[in-house]
Image (cartoon, rainbow, N blue to C red; front, side):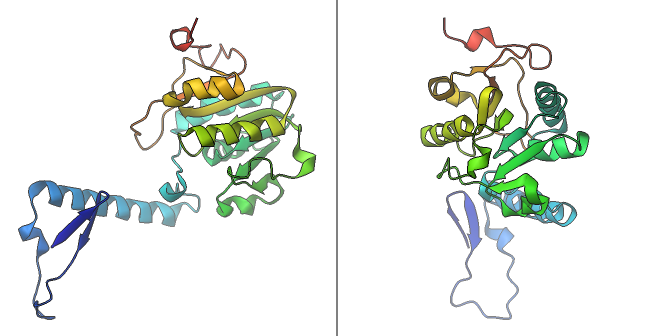
Length: 235
């Protein structure tokens, strides 16, 4: 039979079933349950295939959701421009998707990744292990070091954005350009903790997420990001 809990489907075999008896569980599943099971198996197969071809495939268990190439490249271009063509130091906080795009399209950019996923430690001196629960447990020499700080908090919670804000403050130099990519539901909190406003541009992910995402900045990014979205800014 199929047991469903927390959206997951598992199979259990009746205790009186013979070991050598062929079992076709799909015959006894409802249409909706069978469809959910097939979708789950297809997602698992796709994830395995992606992992084989990409050592940095997104890990949903770590709340990783990669941007589309268009989104990643547009934000990367903005970041490079605000860092004097990539010559000034750029911090990517919990946004490995952007870090990968910067490395691919702007290999000379002075970029550093702060990330929980230790797979990225292969980038050596450009990687620092980062746990948002310990927002300023970072090397002292990185305090106030970065001209551009971009963050993508892993969770849509007050605690997560508040602690990420502490990290952003710690890493930023006095006149740093800051960008936050997070859900629209975090709009009031981003303003409360960082004084940043949402832009017109809407970031997209390779996997369609249920929550609308926004790019927030501490400056009006007109050319690429469309400037601040006045319809989302309280008078």
